[in-house]
Amino acid sequence: MKFAKLSVALVLAGLVGSPAYAVDADAAKALAKSNDCFKCHAIDKTKKGPSLQKIAAKYKGKPDGQEKAIKNMTSGNKVKLEDGTEEDHKIIDTKDQAQLKNLADWILSQ
Image (cartoon, rainbow, N blue to C red):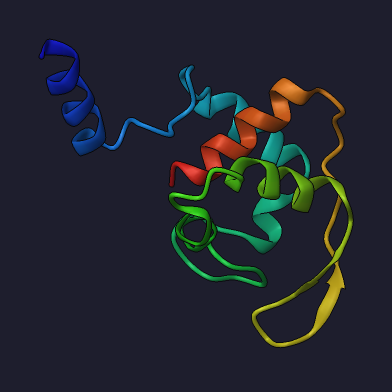
């Protein structure tokens, strides 16, 4: 019975599906800044690219959200910008999977 109550409490608190570790926001922001992510993205407003909040909303509740965010940051695929034009998305300059996961989880937590 206690387990069931705990499960319900976690679901209501929105903790199910969250990373099993604490996101290091400072490290994520530093990685984003060093890769010029804030040139096109802001946390809460649209710039050349969508806000991080808009990106987070797009992937909210999707089990593959982290994977898709990392793929977008590392593949260099064409992205459609807010003005309708397209360009290659800049590739994050790190191969460290922990850093990529932390950045993706930070973005998705916005």
